[in-house]
Image (tube, rainbow, N blue to C red; front, top):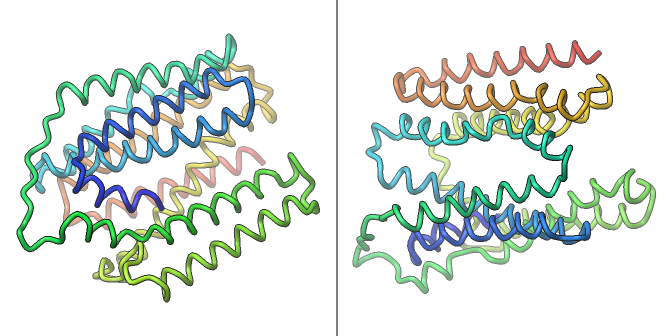
Length: 304
């Protein structure tokens, strides 16, 4: 939800400042995670890092679109994604570092962000912003940001996710803590939806953005399905490797290397193909969806 405000804020304050702020916030979050003695401090560090990473990702995409011609954006998108290559075996690094001290994981991420901060501060020279005299002034742009919707959406989803994490672990599913948190989260999410439809003049997702409904909602469903597949791979596969196959830390790290490399490889290849043959995007996406479905079915079958 907070990501919606980044576009107007970066237009007003400049992309470089917002970019540096996001990197600094993520670096601070990793420092907190590496140094905190409590679980609450670790969660706070993760929140800081999450907001920072969200800012980095969105501004990086905007910067790429701003500096690169439209015809070359898919190619440069693939190049930008390839920058994740050193971190594709991230789970292996984490497992090996955890054998010594898990705090080194956050420490490495903080050092990496410090390097990124220095590179962006030194070498990124944003083009001058040219404002149309007919554009709304900065104060008017800020007034169009739906801060109430952002607050309702964040509060609702955070409460709901906290309730899901508490259930069966911190508290029993039948406990009032879990029930109250889930209930408040759902009610707040419903209030957010009602507010966005009936309460605000400037919703977070303007309906005018949907020019072609069927292709748009199809893409949204594909993205949702891809996320549903990605989360179990990234989070539950290491747990499955340890609990089902009795893997050691090192073996678990090795088992997760294909996941990171293939996710990154698929992103680079698909972006390159869409850039090379933009009129065949539907065929390219269909092929990758079939690959994803086949791989998921094979993994479920092997687990059973």
